[in-house]
Structures are given as structure tokens and as C-alpha cells.
Length: 197
Image (tube, rainbow, N blue to C red; front, side):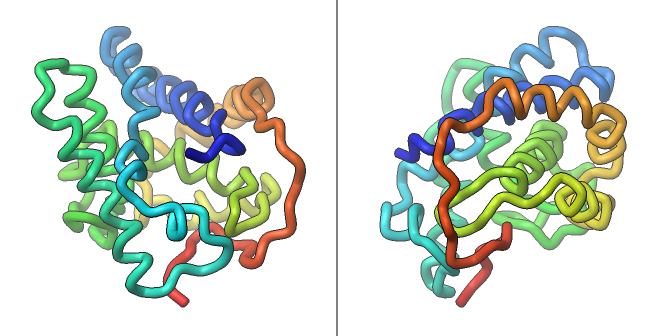
């Protein structure tokens, strides 16, 4: 539904596999992580375009609708007989949880958040920061990394952030290989978080 950011899924998949590998997970897990990570936003198929593609901040009611993409994605995938799709369900459900318990939809904290969600949260957020979206300009690398460091132990699993920082050159190679082929646009709100109006 959003062709301009189609490579986002490829970048998140590759970075998620890298993080999983460096966390010490076995090859089978890492391969599943690579295939399941692109399902993180599958629930957005249930979000109306007027909200999903809105330039600028969302109104409070719109933001509450947007947040339901986590639960929608989980419900679509959770009853599959496929371990891959069930991992996708866990990712969809948990990739907006925060390490300090302030995320959504369940307010999980720390290691209560599935590791697949903690991994994709880092891969997804860094990519979102560095990308142009209908509601924001791309951040420069220094500001993006400063933001990720500040959120270590608050929004993000510290172990995932530490790995991301150690392997930032490899991550930037992934960014370059799967760069979006799009023209820069002027956006109403040059910030990552839409929040509420």
C-alpha cells in the first residue's frame, strides 16, 4: 500500500537477522527472523489510508486507530500451523512494546517482551529515522544514533542497541543496498513520532 517505502521491509529483515546472529541465536532462528521480520506491520492492511498515509500529526482518535495495527497483525497470524507465521504474529504484536513498559499494546516490560519484538523494534526504528515518510523528513545519521543511544534501556533492549552500534557500518551497507528510489519530499512534521495533534 506504500510503494515509496517498499524497501523498508528488506532493510528491517536484514538488520533483524544481523542482530539475532550477534545475540547468539542459531542459524534456524536467524533465518526465520529474516523471513518473519517483514511481517511486523502486516496489521496496517486494516488501517484506513486517510490515517496510514496522512501527512502531519494524527489526531488522538486517529493515533488510537493506528496503534491497533499491532493487534490486527497478531490476530491475522497467531493461529497459523506455521512456526514462521507464529513468529510473525509475535513480532507484529510486540514490536511497539518498550523496554520500560511504556509501549503498546500490552505495556510489556524488559524481557517479558518477546526477543523477536525487541530485535525488530531496534531495526524498525533506526530505519524509520533514516527514511523519508509522508509525515517526516529523514534524520541525519548522527541525530538518529544519538536518539537510539538515549532510548537504550528505556524504549530499547540495551543488548540490541549495543549490537546495533557495534555493527553500524554493516547496517549502513544494508541501508545503501536497499535504498528507496524516491524523490525527497517536503513534509509537514520532520519528527519520527507522530503522537497526537
